[in-house]
Amino acid sequence: MEQVVKVAKIGKSANSVDPNDFIFHSSYNTFKIILEGTKTVTLNDLTSNQTFTQAHNLSFIPTVSAFAIETPITGKINQVFLPNAVNINLFGVKLGWTSTGVKFNYVASDINNIIFNFDNDTADFIDVDIRYFVLEGI
Amino acid sequence: MAQIIKVALPGYNASTDTDPNHFALYVDQSVDYILIKEKVTAQVSVTNSQTIAHNLGYVPFCLVFVETSSGVWRKVFSRSIDSYAAYFTVDDTNLNLYCPSATKNFIYHIFYDNIT
Image 1 (spheres, each protein chain N blue to C red):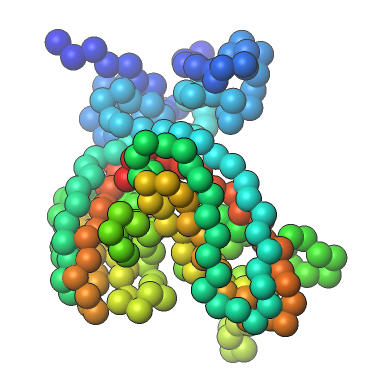
Image 2 (cartoon, helix red, strand yellow):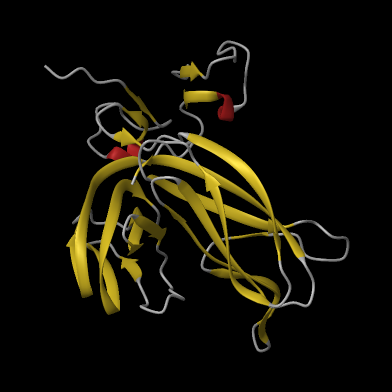
């Protein structure tokens, strides 16, 4: 007989068969964060496709999520932006949007490294702080 | 009375610490700390598009990755800026993988967690 450890959400029955009713259920794999960390990179001015690597020292290719923020500067919008996105600093329904000129192109991983890639369309060197979460094998 | 299961990471006291980041497992019935529950994971080769039926009846949380070069896996989103335009969509029945400009290997994880 299968032994199960489960914790239902408040108001839900522990006998429910809906996985969404549980905060924890040992029958389902919960993605585990193997490690997390931060990395600060400096983007060269007016340069696209800038790649930075961070060794993960794992024996497998991990699943990775990452978030970036331009190093806070007074007077600038300080917000987190995701891969596959620019850092939008102005948006209007009719005006559209503008960005700071920094684009987080992608996060990837291989057997050795986590790989971050950015564009910097500005004439300034830009510091970007990255927080990454390394999960189970991909 | 709330049921609590906590397993602290090395160096932290499970009895006194209240920071969820210091726990390998932290469930107290009051807050869902996104212990995402995996339904299925698989690898497929995609040319143009591929439909993966999950039949959950709601839109589940998914993670999708594409092998951009041998052994290098890049996280995929619902809007692509890649030259081969890899992206995915998900609805209450299917996960749809798209790669209209090339044939690429995808790995997907579908979780039970309802995002709608």
